[in-house]
Structure formats: C-alpha cells, structure tokens
Image (cartoon, rainbow over all chains, first blue to last red; front, side, top):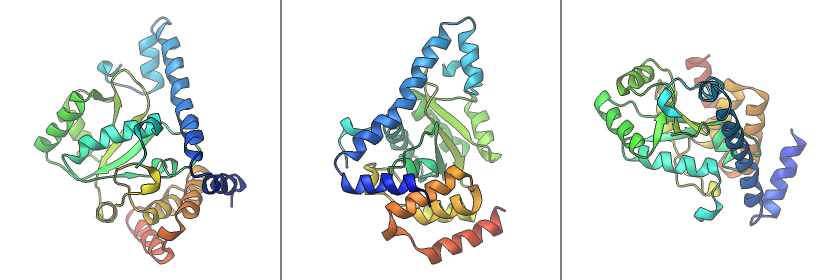
Length: 63
Length: 184
C-alpha cells in the first residue's frame, strides 16, 4: 500500500471543496510546460520536424 | 457536475472529444484517465477510448465531425487508412490541431471482454465529467492482472480507496479470469 496515495485521498476527503483546484493546477502544469517547450522547439531550425519526431506525429498536417 | 471554470486541460479535451463520439457510437474511457479524473495525482499524455466497431461509412461520419471540431489524426489524414488501422486492431490517435498533447487513443472493441466493458459502462459523478467510463471493477482488474506496471498498480489502489462502494471483489476475480483466458 502506498503512503502517498493514502495521504492524498485523506486530503481529498477532508477538503472536498479545495482538492480539485490543486489537482487541476497539477494536471494543467504538464500541458502548459509542454506548450512552452513546443514553442521553443518550433523556433529552432527544422523545429516542426523535431516536434513531429518527439511526439511520434506522422501526419504533417497535424501541426 | 462541475462548472466550466473548474475544468483542467485534460478534462476539457475529453469532454469535447466524447461529445462528438457520443453522436456516432457507444464508447468507454478506460485506464489511466479513469484514475486521474478520480483525483489521482499523476501525469499522462493520452486518454484511452474503446468504441463500438463501425463500418467505414459510419467511421467516415465520425471522423468528419472530429475534423470539423479541429481534431486531427496524428498518423494519417486519409480516413480509409485510419479505418484500416482500427480494423487491424491498431489504435489511432487524435490531437487538437497544432497541439501535440493531450491525445485521444482510440481502438475498436476487439473481444468479449471489450463488449462486457461497453455493456457495463458507467458515469462517475465524482469526476465531474458527463462521459462514459469502463466500470471500476474492470479498471482494477485490468490494471492488477494485465497492465501490472507500478503506475497501474497504484492507479488500482487509488480506485479501490476512492470508490469502495463500487468495488466487488467477486466480480474483479471473474474479470481477471476472463483476462487470463482471452488476453494472456
């Protein structure tokens, strides 16, 4: 059993009105960071090709 | 259900996608996103979806609706090619155009287990999402018996603790037996 899971679920149950905001920020952070990273890569030479390779995107029209 | 201001990026992507798929066939969201939308604090790049098997004509309509909503398949533009992947039991991935993540990974139903998953699909009010999920028992069984990575075991543990009222150990055992018979 994982102590961190117990701790977080306890927090969820004790804070039903606030846990979601913390959780949303956590989830969003990944995508915000990725978007910033993609912008930087796109500024590099062959940036689009690099990005397609990183994310395994075969369809050139996707990005 | 929660208000729009409380949605995270992953939730909104899922809602937008599911609204379109819902018009064309039955579907379920499975695996990691079930745990994450139920409060599990871990990252993911994709959401896994299983949909009913469609004919090419039916799939073309679904694909067109997805394209009209600014989704794009990362493997191919040709709907015939995308459909052939699905028929060959390969998943296809859609993203929002010009955004590499998150992505929706779609598969057609492939066996009796998937059919049962669709038949026993549920909505989970705690997630705040009006979308269809495979049952908690199904998710736990797949994660403990089939996927088995550290991440999956922790997802299962999280689901057991968040939804004790939905967990039926006898049902989980039966699903695990089916997984052994059909998938392992």
